Length: 295
Ligand code: HH2
Image 1 (cartoon, rainbow, N blue to C red):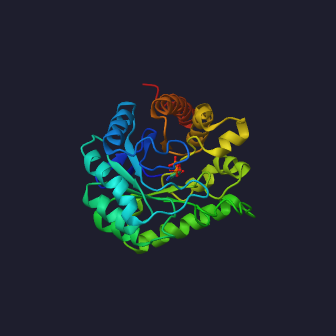
Image 2: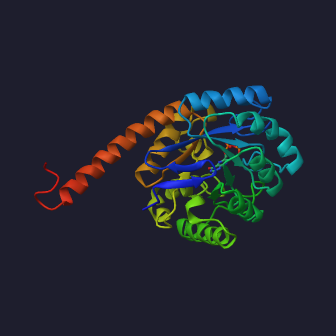
Image 3: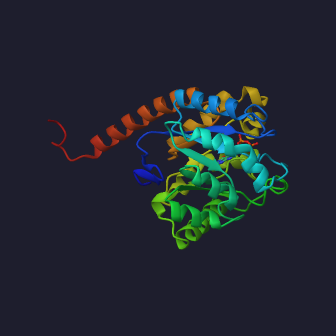
């Protein structure tokens, strides 16, 4: 069982319903929305739209992590997201910062960000854990083998979920050794990061194994290429696949979802959650001793 809430800088975020992180990529080259929100005003407008559609957090990123993407410097990353983070701190929902760089994370926390989303799970810069520990920010630890430039070159694993789980357990140990509370941590199997299409499906299927780490689980299948490969659809036709992957993940224990299309995800996941709860209620009623719960 994952804990009932996630401690982020803005307080405790209850996990009693699916939590949606709306994606705001302030990049010229993100795989599905690159170049659309480069101008700060347009980016903040988009963030407001995501909030109106039901986002619980906005995840702001300034460096694409698509396979083969070239890295950017901390200076360039902050040049892209700094003006957006500063203006978006007026939003009614907390901001998550998708970065692997200590310098960018520190500036974002100064500007009021509440969560650090590290796609390298502390492999690139473990000082992100020090920042989370000191500030009380939430910390998302996502699994990736290697780095974005080369991660799709070798997608063979002996035991994919076993390795993902062991790597994330090691990242959790690093984070707690550097002072983070377990209640600040969320784990993510890293859909699309150094995995084959079948590997991504296997990760979703075996998600309950990741939940045994005892931390909330986040997934980010939104518009990713495994959906394109499985369904034979281009990036602009991956909504149904995204929703199906999210619902499958919810049924297997995920509580947080990083998505571009917030409104449809809100509806799909709220409906799936209602069914899940009803099922859980029936199960516990069936296993309750005779004579209880009948009024
Ligand atoms: N996926 C992407 C980026 N950040 N963070 C987490 N925690 N989980 C994910 O699955 C995840 C992530 C990649 O998607 P996107 O931001 O749309 O593309 P790009 O990296 O090209 O900007």
